[in-house]
Length: 444
Image 1 (cartoon, helix red, strand yellow):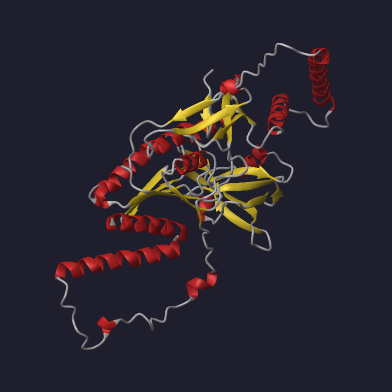
Image 2 (tube, helix red, strand yellow; image 1 turned 180 degrees about the horizontal axis):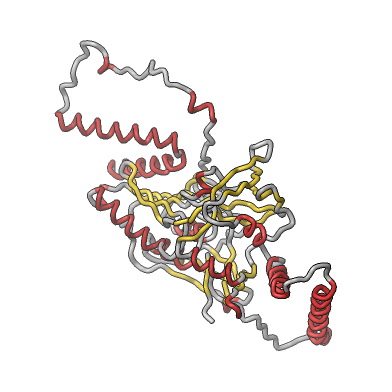
């Protein structure tokens, strides 16, 4: 059966270790192990039969076995789990970029559901859900003690239906409720635009359309700008990107690298490791790059940020990423279900693992939270007047009309950048870096 590989998913384990010399006590222990395993399997069978025969209510035998399988997998780590036939089908749909739901990527921490990141333009994003939020209740029912899959099931429902989730957020004194209307989530993997002379590529997820959308979006923006010479750099915005397909993370990294390693994976057996290298060709033609990350940047996002950072191809700006450095292999099972199993860790080109540590930005830039009072403040305009506003002021006779027009256009761009700084400080900071680099390059 063909394996389906997700978010840093590559390789499987053989599970076989061969030794040539073994001490007698170890041999005795190995001989005893199968007996212990069979005894425990017999114990499992006894418990299953007693539940089926004596539990206070009639049970669904299939659901009971699925719960046992899932319990075994979820006891390993937060990312290993059993996927029922319906869940497996949903996962395959999600990688194609359209599905029903709230639009959040979640994990489990301290018994509660933790938001890895909201997805741009989804109901959760529009409702104000943020990376790092803890979901404690769904429709007033606690999720404490539930598995992650059980909690996610509680959040599922028909498109158009309402759900109320209770959120605990750092910096807030009390939990608060958020009402969200479920909707069909149509993911736009990449949104491309130009700010001043900088192309901004906002990558929201790594599905099977990501590289294709990124290449097309970059080409379109460069063409509208008048060619690559008119562009001062690229911002790759990976904030709140929860990851996705490893193959797409490799392609996006390769898009801006001429050579060298992109990522490697290592399992229990060193022979099962993989190494992925870049091929010649840089879509940005060597233009400087800034990558934006934050606590919602996970998995495949961290592969891209780590690869371009290690190769000094991009300056990484923002806050520390999520820190998911493990590899999950999704293996189809009989009955159309699947098993998501952690099979390896991945490493950046310099050999560092980001598991539980995350990618540290080269320049730490926090995104300030806007105070509600800021919108109510009015500008007085007392200091907006200039010499040109004074009655009878002299004209500037040293510049031609074209030079004056160019100065006014440059000033307008600066003012636009100032507005952007109020809306998105981290992005404005990234654009300022590229502008500064272009000024230095022109001076040379």
